Image (tube, rainbow, N blue to C red):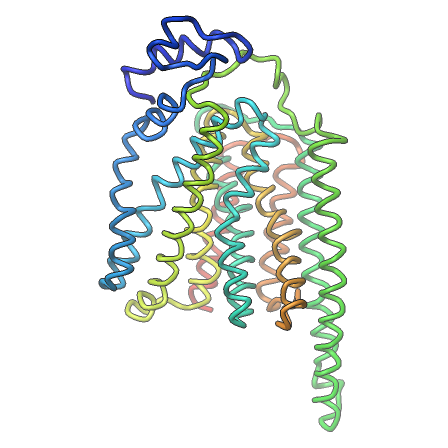
Amino acid sequence: MPPSDTSPLLANGAHHGGGSRASFHERILGVLNAEGEPTWTASYRYFFFGSWLNVLLVFVPLSILSHHLNWDAALRFVFSFIAIIPLAKLLGDATEQTSTRLGQTLAGLLNASFGNAVEIIVAVAALLQGQIRIVQTSLLGSILSNILLVLGCSFLAGGLTRQENVFQVTAAQTSSSLMTLACITLVIPAAYHSSQNDPNTTPDATLHQAQDAAHNGLLIISRGTAILLLFVYVAYLVFQLKTHHELFLAEGEGEEEEEEQHMNIASAGVALLGVTLVTSFCADYLVASIEETADRYSIPKPFIGLILLPLVANAAEHVTSVWMAMKNKMELTIGICVGSSIQIAAFVVPLMVIIGWITGHEMTLYFANFETIVLFVSVMLVNLLIQDGKSNYMEGLMLITLYLVISLAFWVA
């Protein structure tokens, strides 16, 4: 909730509507500008003082200091982890204020893009250093975190406040179908690799040549598939934002009473950029401390790559998605969770393949068989649960349970 000294004025201004001009006394008080929107001062007063959770922002400088002064790894991990919590909430606030003008569809796409900025930066850096397995596991973990943990918590939170949550089934099915396609493009390289590297069917004398041929085949399959997936993702954006945008709108969106606006669109956009930048630094500091922390406390490396890193990187999506679900904005929730996963699977992963192709790093779409199976069953469960256009707390519990089972499996991997 915003501070008591600004709420009445902001609420009063919201009733003027987006196109009305602010009254004389509101402009004198500096709450609304001439267009009837909150001023920059009023916007950032709400942004930084609108929640008690922002007290935790004190951990942002602590995270920076602990990293550059090389404090104990556990302290660096804890400070960076706690610092991301209020930053994620601020990112959600800025996204919500942006959605008052952009609509839930475009706001969901915007939030997914900003939420994936950290993953893209980390993936490019790791790829250029030749750490291909880190790229693969972190991106796969990001997909699983979004469609299981984040979506599951959103369904659970929404189901605790009402009997059922309803969303546009056609849009959800289209998104889940594209997610399934992206998943299949990872199954095919795994199946090809298994068929080409079976020692029982390949003589020892030609095994090495067969492995080289299989690797070259994987590169051709992966690079060709990456180009096709990028084309499909662009087509999906056109489908979502232009040709069939009405399918992604909530029932009555645009007709219901306009929500109270606490930030103008420009200040919300600047806030999105600024918070994303600060969050990326804190996430980098967290990543830098994880390996030392893992060695000290004997945490398995696969668990770090597929569970811990994506869990932190998706903190922004997690908070925003759950908050939107509690407010019954399920189209925005689906857009954040499934949309973010689609962006990773159909855009970021193929993009890494193309960048690797350009820079001479042989990134492929071949993941370990166990990881591919885990992704396939996860996407299958999500498809089954959202095909009716309704959600409840039990469906959320199912998704969270599968994520916990997967986490347990990678803990012992």
